[in-house]
Picture (cartoon, rainbow, N blue to C red):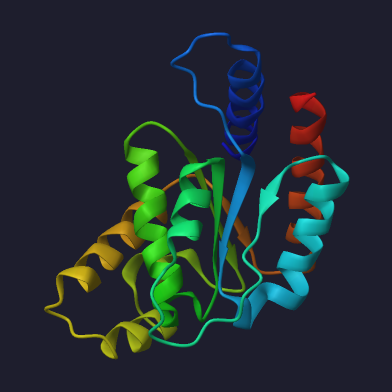
Length: 190
């Protein structure tokens, strides 16, 4: 299924760039990366971003370190809307960031409107932990007001996105395998 997701990405990118229809979406970014900087910025994300740049994949990566409680910027929402694909990198601290959770809701809105492909990556976290929102995810959600409508949107978005076809990266071999598949996708994209 992973290869199908990448094939969909490849064919969608080709068709969107070659379409002359005025209704076709013009993408500013091929990929939007949604991630917890605490877990992945200096290792997985930096390697993935470098790989994308080398392959000519135009990628949005927010480099700002954000304070807890800060609200998501309009610039970031626009970057999500302007991306063909969103890679959601779930990691142990993903749900501790309200910024990540707000991104996730916006990403799902774009997916549901038919304008975006969403691919989850489970980085050093079990997909069932994310799906069931237990372990570190349960601990993070306990810190939020449970009756808050915003929290309910976060939980629903997470539950839906975790069920999309993606990758479970709990070891280096899987990371190398993913890099190979991404290289394949970028070759097919040309």
